[in-house]
Image (cartoon, rainbow, N blue to C red; front, top):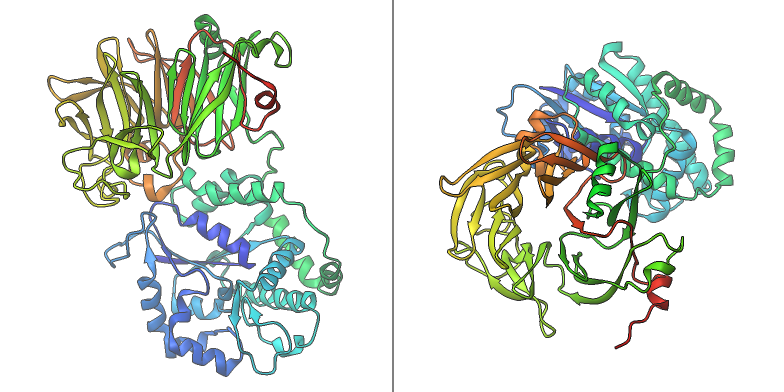
Length: 614
């Protein structure tokens, strides 16, 4: 396998490394603080003798074999499985700021190694390095003889003695200049096909396009899972106020040659500029909006990944997506006067107050207003789906592998667990996640495995899912790929085979599921209106959880949103698609007869000024 080493400013190279580590066929080094080399005693001895973290080609004779063994020992795949030496294809990926000082050694020790240089704006790179020094979180040489300054952070560069006694801004600028010039000098000394540059700004502005280009150059398969670290960094950058650092600005002027060199690499590697549109943006088909209009209803969508409860509301030929903040919103359970919403540690009771709706601005627009009336604290029991049945609210407590109800005296009241679960304890043993009601009673549940060890369902997630009958505690369907959202509709049991991206109907007599529609995302969240199924879709970018699923093999690009499917012929009748920040959907629920409701957040003016008396 080919070794690929990422070099560049510390924070920038780590972002790209974390991104590439999510690709199929990439074995990445788990060593993050230093590098895979720095566990070797001989490397420490060389550092002391050379008074820096520099390694050169001549060092291969002493530590080349040990270096190759250390890299292999540190490798895992995107699922976290250790490298066993059996893989014949793919990439070995490693990084760390010190590798920028070690290109000649790596190029010689790993004969076919390739390098990726991250060209980051010098001002941003210096600010991030300065923040690391100030935080004390990146100290690399706690005791350094002859050093007059704070404990040395990040790579120890040749010539560090010349920086002793200087202001910290000057120290960081000198360190950055030495790291950058050394890396670029060494890379330019290699054959041109052994290295390539990427522009950090372009990666954050257009991660999809830049990663596709990079994956093609490295010979690996692009996957949406790669986008997460870069998109997170772009959002943090957009929200962060950048404070001026006059001391750094002056130092950049002193490093004019290196700055110009990096900017030239940025221009040569840059991709397309990104979009300035809202990160919560969505697109929809006219048929989706018209479908809600015909139903005279709106649609609730929970997305735990963004901490939002969304209400899709049709009005005047337009579809409005109304976002409200909750901490990790999950399952939604409807009742005639409102709904319950499960969150990270609580269950919210949201009630419609009809007298409030006409007063919500713009006045006369809304036909319902849901306000928080009660909340029950459960603790973090990994609430998944909720439902009302038999006059009670039932909860899937996934962490405890059980179904529960609630009362005023307890966090939750366990009511049922699968017979293979031996203990009522946190640990998510089988990933119990969904429940279906038949004739006002809880009847069917979905789980991702039948294991009794914490997290034991994970290795078999692609085909170990089951549907169980709560009344008999028997498995009625097995061999499913991450099943979610069981629902009883029109006299039949429906389920989403999420790992395949399918909407299915269950034949209880044969114990088999039949595919009704194959959809372009991880299917999770399901509600019905006549012959229309509203199906939630997620992009699933967490490669450690979703990397080996059939859906990932079928689709390079997965979509997020809600798709309207005709359950008779399996055709798609429209969709609402989220294009940026919203990447995961957990549950969907139709609010019948509520065309344009308001949902008031806790702490809002509507909550403070609205009262309901006997």
